[in-house]
Image 1 (cartoon, protein in one colour):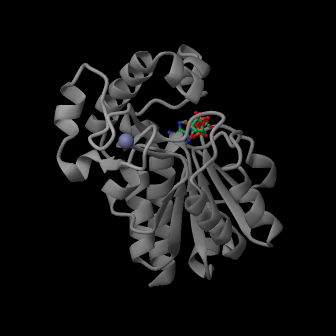
Image 2 (tube, helix red, strand yellow):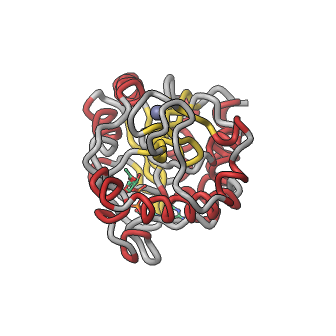
Image 3 (cartoon, protein in one colour):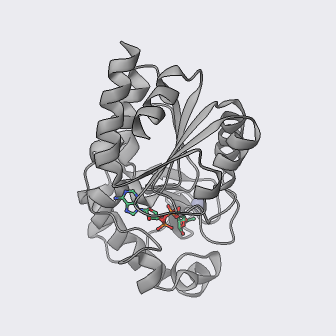
Amino acid sequence: MIEEAARLMARSRFAIAFTGAGISAESGVPTFRGPGGLWRQYRAEELATPEAFRRNPRLVWEFYRWRMNLIGKAKPNRAHYALAELEKMGVLKAVITQNIDDLHREAGTENLIELHGNIFRVRCSVCGYREDLKKSGRLGEFLAGKSLPHCPDCGSLLRPDVVWFGEALPEDAMNMAFGLAERADVCLVIGTSGVVYPAAYIPRIVKESGGRVIEINTEESGITPVADIFLRGKAGEVMEELVKMIGRLVK
Ligand code: OAD
Ligand code: ZN
């Protein structure tokens, strides 16, 4: 199975990857729906919706500062590095992620599309102000802060630059992702339950456009019915082996 996946990738013309929380599990970032998943412990509608932010911005910010801290300590794992390596080898053309943890970028992936935003960015809830806290060097100060953060331009509340339930995805990211999915002849799907739309359309679009879908997951998911190859296992372990095999094939 894994040999077949390696051959498909090595021979591909335009391979892409589509990732979810499972790829970061081995980095210590909790997933959402599995054992220990965030949405099993917390109610998403109280923490990750625009209504929740209007009702109780303190609670929402407490949750996101806690996650920022946790994710800030996490390091990319073998699966993130393997994807960056595949891009350098010229095999992988883009990574489309639902994750907000920045670990693909930290691992060196360059053509990265973040469908659900990025936890290290904030934006104004009213005006167009945006800030990348890693770039502005204010992450430490921001995490240490206990009070609600305000916009330096208009004074309104700042919010995390992430997509909440009931919100539209960033249009440019979504158009780019759907365009890539139509072009792709292979899509490597890693660590997603495949139940959150429109992101979960990505592998389906690949399939409908005549491409092949390779899935890596510890369990079957909403994507498994459209997967041509299902590789059961942890993302880090499977990707390490897969990238070695592909490396031998493309030499
Ligand atoms: P989920 O928590 O729904 O699914 C994680 C998937 O990863 C499951 O299918 C697990 O079986 C799998 N998994 C866990 N550990 C793994 C490992 N070590 N290796 C491989 N697979 C593993 O996370 P997502 O599918 O990413 O949205 O969730 C989608 C969206 O729902 C998120 O982007 C977030 C959430 O609400 C927003 O915040 C908008
Ligand atoms: Zn503002």
